[in-house]
Image (tube, rainbow, N blue to C red; front, side, top):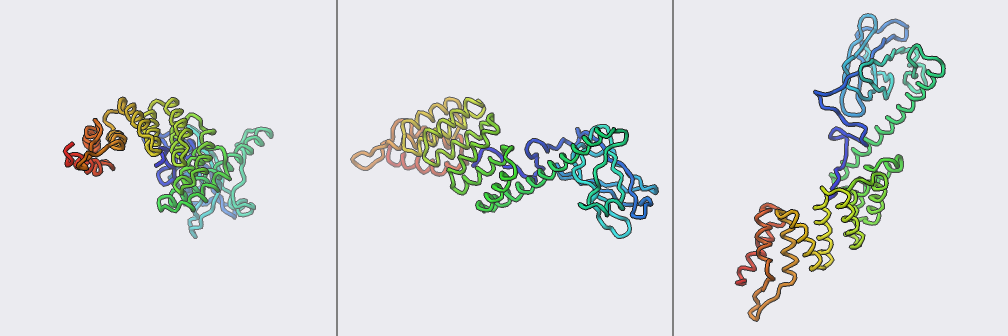
Length: 354
C-alpha cells in the first residue's frame, strides 16, 4: 500500500497544489459582470448566464435583466467557464473558458452573440479592459491566453487522474498505467503524476519501472519522505535490500514523523530476506520508540520463532521472549491482520508445554 494518497477530482481535487477549495465560511469572493446582446444587436432578457467552476466542482448562475445586463458578485475566487443559455430555445452557448475571478473586483465580460457566432473557435475573443494602452492590452490578452491554456491542461490532467483512480479501484492496472503514462507525457513538472504512475507500476509488479517513476517524483519534490518510503518498499520487493534500507534511512532522517514507518519497513525487508538477527534487532529498535505497535511485536515473535528448536518428544522450544511478543501482539492489535495467526502460534507453544 502506498503511503501517499492518490489524488482525484472525485473528492474535490486539489490537483498539483493549485486547486485547493477554501472552506465555505472562509471563501474569498470576486465577481463577473457584463451584458448579453443577441445576433440582432438587441439586449437578451432573461437569459441564464452560467459560471461553471473548473478548479473545484461548483456551478452558479444568474439571469440577465431587461437591459441584458448580468452580474454575480459573490463568486468564490477561482477559475470558471462562462456560458449563456438562451431563453427561447434553451441553446447553451460557451462564451469564454478559463476566466479567473479576483478578490474584490468583478471581471467584465460582455457577450456579443453576433461576434461569438462568427468566431472561429466558438468562444468570445479575449478583450482587454477599457483604459489600457496598446502595450498593456497586448500583455493582458497574452496573459489571459496563457492562463486559458494552463487551465485547459490542468483540466485534462484532472480528467486523466479521475480515469486512473477508476481503473485502480477496479484493479485494472494496465489501463491505469496507460492513463498515467499519457499524463506524464503531457506534463513532466508535477511530482504527483509520477507518484501515481509509480504506484500503478508497483501494483502491476513492474518494480523496476516503479522505482524509476518514484525517483522522478523525488527529483521534483525531494522533501517528500513518503516517496522515499515507497521507493524503499519497491526496492525491497525487487530484493535490493541495501537500496531499500538506504531509502528508509533517508526518509527517517528527512522527516522524523516518518521514522517509525521507515524503521518498520526496513525491519520487514530484513525479515523477508531471512536475516532474523538483523530483523529482530530492527524491530527491537522500533519497539523502543513505539512499544504498542502490535504488528511489530508479531514480527518480533516471528524472528524469535525462526530460531525455535524441538525436544526429544517433538515439543517446540521457543526462544525466550517469543510468547511474550505474541501476547503483546494480540494485546495491542486484537483485531489486526496478524491477530488470528498470533493466537494460533501462542496456542501451539502452550500446547507444547513451553
